[in-house]
Length: 397
Image (cartoon, rainbow, N blue to C red; front, side):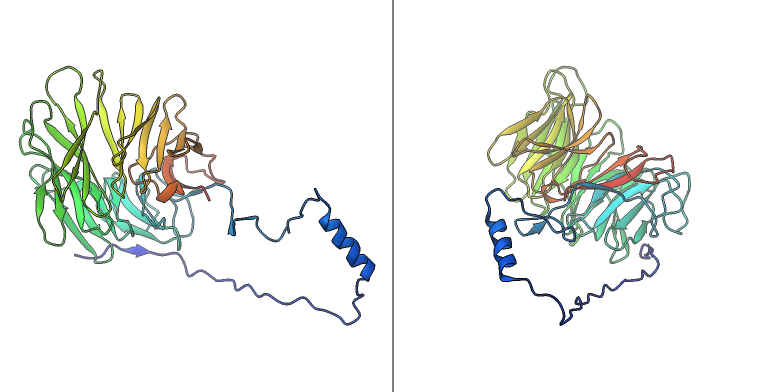
């Protein structure tokens, strides 16, 4: 197995800033004692505004404060724009790597089918772009950016894969006969969660956990019942201990067709959340990396449930997209306007992200400091002229 080819930017010239001391002369006129006393008195007057130095950024509590800003990610190492549409972005927990799919053919020189999307990883520190072989959709990334999960053509059907960019390996998940979809990776890339599809369409779907160290595959979803038949959309905590997934009743009518199940994989304890009501479809968004909170959608509303306190917060007319690793922020789409917003679940404050766009589970870093999303808008950054959807990162500070 060959390692994915990494294309880096041209060797950047590092400009060394040379700081020199201002020259002084012995003939400089010394301020008089009266002038010094006058300046001191003026400074001590109440209500006298302080003048910030124009050469220094504003600081708050000893740290620099910056305005929120949006940057385009789906570009070449030399920052040229992509010649095709990009989407499905996720970001590593440290905020350094962004993985996404793209139909562009100019992001790296690696040959691939121009009619099918491929997966790329952008290093936000260096600008380097890595081509991940055969990655059509469903991108997931480990906490340190070492592993990227993708879904691609298997022997007979779509199959999930784990690409270890450091080791240069590509590992298939599940059986190629029935197909599989990767849905989550643990923080250290040891565990991969995937939905296994049966050989016969009438058989139920199952959620599996693969231990990539031992090679063991375990069915982690519960046994099917008429009310809970198909199991899918598994989401995993960073340490691989807590799993959330969706249980769906395929046949029959009536309410409560979907439920969200959370299971502690060490103790086997399961907790069921009331996923659907009034015949509305429910879907799992994401389990937080710390395993404390789970976000899901029911009908036209979004919910975030705190597994420790048992409290649930509801966002009306909202579509949840991603939950921050600490469970404190939800990236969502406003149902009325399509605006992408970030909700601080503790304070209830909303932060603007983009006028419209889409995002995937895994699109946030801790405390919602960085969010990645895809949008076809051409006015988010200067010189966006490719007439295609791009991947962007929104930095709050």
